[in-house]
Image (cartoon, rainbow, N blue to C red; front, side, top):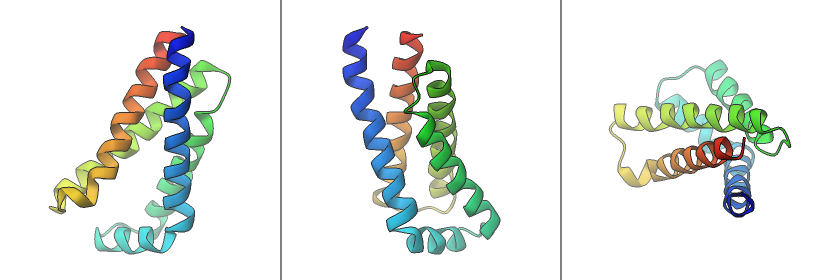
Length: 115
């Protein structure tokens, strides 16, 4: 069980850094992308609030909260990937979403084994 912790914690840090970077440092790009995809501003803001909230949940000491956080990020990343597929983006444009989706799945699986 200790070995799984060595895998899960770095993955949580990667997700946290990536989401905070994209939603704070590159927020102007997020606004542009959501407009290009035809999504309303309220939806963009809701997605941002949810991503940040779920990211914070990843660092809880309560395993069930981590499961909720990783599941939430997983669902949001699945939505991002499907949006990129819908608008026919180049794969290079959404490889980050696929990577985050994969990492969220790994966090969820490893956390569920720790419960």
